[in-house]
Image (cartoon, rainbow, N blue to C red; front, side):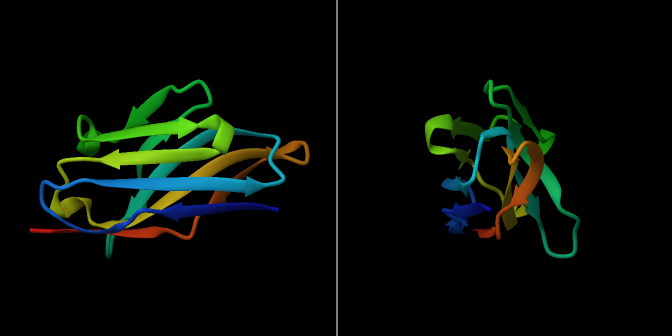
Length: 119
């Protein structure tokens, strides 16, 4: 089994910063893509940022220049540094890991961590 656990959410004022972490553990052969998604109340889940095993990144237009995704392959961990936060960044942030285990690729999701940006 593979577990994905996020941490680092909280409440912050507009313009503040937060750093999210996501660690994958278990029977992992390799982790390919890791990413952060978010879901605001009443809205669909959307992509925030993704990073490949070669550290290639992609961001949603709404967070470019404010958020930075990075990963530590030795720790099977991905981070999301969020700066200049806005109220519209509020939501539950989910981590997804594309993991190769038992000879196949699977997507694993974390349970989510709440980020609230107050105005």
